[in-house]
Structure formats: C-alpha cells, structure tokens
Image (cartoon, rainbow, N blue to C red):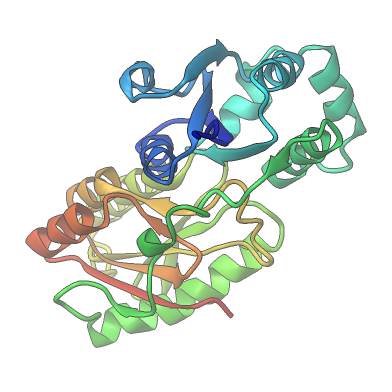
Length: 284
C-alpha cells in the first residue's frame, strides 16, 4: 500500500538557494509546491521537478496564501534572496500586505518577514527554518580554506565583527568591509556583493589620492542577534567570491552555524584558487 507524499511549500527568491532546498526536499521524499517570485526567482525553477509552480509578485500575499491552501500545503520554507530595496520600493501590495505594512512599528526586513510568517501560521501554514534540509552546508567553525587569515586580516576581522554586531542590532545590514582596521563600507539595502563593490570604488578613489591604507580588503558577514533562521539567512555563493577577487578583497569572515555556503565545495575551490582566506567563528 503506497501513501501520498507529504507536501512542502517553497517560497522561492533569487539565486541557487531555492534550488538546493527543492532538490533536498525531493530527495527526502517531499512533493514540492513552489511559489515563485516574479521579481526574483529564476525561470529555471519550472524545470526542477516541482509538483506545481505558481508565479506571483512580491506584493501578492493573498494570492500566495490562496495558492498554498489550494495545493494543501501545511509546511513551507522561504529560501533565496529578496533584495531589501525591492521589498520597500518595487512592490505593489495587495490589500492584505498593505494592511500588514501599515501595522509595522518598524519598516525593516525582519519586521515585514516576521509579520508575513505570523500570517502564514494563522492560516495554518508552519514556516520551517530555511536551512532545515541543508544543515551540512552551514559554515563550520574554523578556517575553511587552505589559507588562514594573516595577522592583519585577523585584526580586521576582530574590528569588523564589533562594527557588524552594532549595526546588526538595528537591522541595518550584516556585512562590513574593512582595510587596516578602518571601516570602508557597511551594508544597508543594497546587499553583500554591492557593498563589496562600493568598498572597491572607495579604495580606488582613495588610492588616487595616495592613501596610506592597504588596498587588501577584509569582508565580515554576520548573522543578526537572535537570527530567525526561517528567513533572510546569511548566504555566500560563488558570485561573492568573484566580486571579492575583482575588488581586491583577500579575506572573508562568517558566523559558524548561521551562514549558508551555497554549493560549498565549488565555493571553497573558487576561494582557494583566488587566494582568499575564509574563516568562521561562533556567533557571540
């Protein structure tokens, strides 16, 4: 006698993260129902073996709930980036999301996604940790690459962690870029890669004026205090390594157990090939 597969909803953002979740869920025997975000999700999600795919815009909360109900979904996962600036500028909220936005005491990402998660629970849909099926891909404590941080890079990491922790308390951003214990750039709504690129432009302009700072940049990316692992989990992929290499960044520091390494082996191979040191430490 065969039993029907359990259904898992996947609310998919951009990048490789949703594909990893989809593949892991199917390998674990789940029938995956995908809610794909028009502004973010790759069209390739259509060809990954999902039982159903529905395309909707960021602002269509009512449509999302109706789709999950129609497909009989009781558990769901949010995976993949939704750009912060998209959330607050590009969307046209339906009545349900508009009401939610007006009720928020703070208009930051955590507040909005936390409120959406609460609505889903009220509708009988449990939101699981986005890394629930991907625990082996989380950064482990210690040096992850062949090269350990240099003495100066470690000083940058120690300084950058302090700055990043202070910013993260206010949900401003999770990434800071440091050169010789000077903060070159901090993340706001633009995302990690854009922050690194901005830091590179700043260093280029400084060196046009005979700066005393070394051009070698250290990138520190942390989790927020009490990081809600259901959404907005820090993630690093091959693109970030390529952006770092182009920017002259030589070291990347992460929080162990709180940051997802997308396609881990390929990512570390790329970092090693670029001479980039990657290290993770337990979140403070």
